[in-house]
Image (tube, rainbow, N blue to C red; front, top):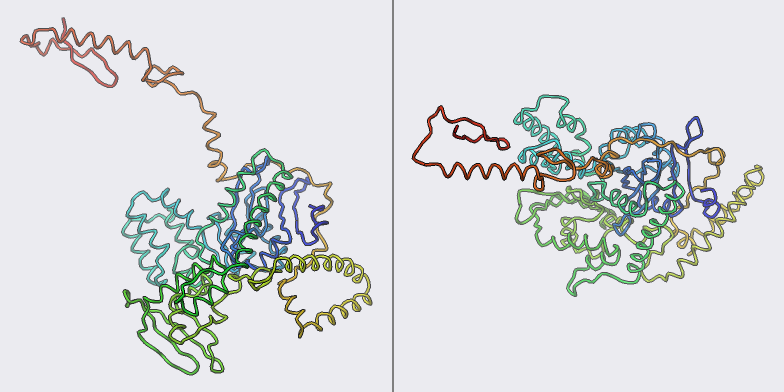
Length: 553
């Protein structure tokens, strides 16, 4: 990794060793991943997976959504044990790599150590449990179909918190759940992490599970195997990462060189949305535009520089939404809807498009177009669709050359206060002279510049020993189940108990059956008229699990 950092000065890595010098934690993120987090780090999904290295250390990728709604990788780490301390170190190191920028929302599985670490390191981030894992636990702990469906309603029903609490108490009473150690009571204690009323209005970009992370783990397992060293694991991870970025580059080129098709009679808002959103996101926005025909205004509340429209669906007039339009200097300044889709998913809802059409707005307001869903979101990428790829590559090469030169100049200047002040003045004058020129616009294209990591508090590489093989908890038992089945003893016959065959091919059972058949034939030849007395009947013919009456001769 030190060699990689020489080629890529913004490559970040940090590791942790135990008292004996064995590796117990590692995190790394390259320049592109850090730039991606700067643009798309509002929602982070992470999960641990096993069987990726011979030390059985859990592999923890941090992923999110890019402007094409594709999975983007922010960084990865490995830890020796899934403890509170290990996850706290991982999250703090992640924050250090990302300039202490914390995500708005986090999605994880139900691991308690993860939950505690997030509350400590990212206390202001919204946390949601993976719905897919909750569904698996529903099947495992609840055995009645009606109870399962009623519990699922608490996940998706976005009624008020008071209504949710009332329904939950009734649900427990009706199913006679009294033990505080039951799974239902445990889930109730974590209700703020999975119940819809507690998550309304929070930005999760439409994600409700960590399947992005699970999908990445599944793809990594096609390249990674349990016998790999950490060095081999990193090489295969880089190969997987390159494939992801190639797919993203292809989508970028398509978005730059084309505009999604719209009908000839499409509205001006739809045509403008096709130009500003990426093609993948425009398909979601178009769905909201098409739903405008089902909207109707039921009431208009006009106030000073604020107009509130009460909008409902034609087929569901009892459910109403308030669209608030704020005016500033005679023009539309901000628009919002009580359904909170714009805040949660980052795309305007059908109610907003309906009101914009009523007000004859032809261009989407800036508040309705989050930059993360446009081509301008990508740092160091030209915002216009007609830009040439050559311009982007040439500017990126110039940026890298200047960045490498500035590293050496800054290092020398920080040795003395005079040189520091002189270089600072030069850079300030250079930055200020571009504020009113086209160069400033070109500079903005590159997005935020990452802070340089000039010190790594991790000791000498030669002193780091191989990790100690650890036995994970929970997941390894499930993942290693197939291998354990292969080591079971051979199948035995259920009749004679001998290995190598079963009841269908057991010779001893066939011989016993043949003797019983011959005995039945002898009984059938007896005179049917001579019925035996009750004292003459004895139970002697033994068939597996049954007794047959026979006549005493």
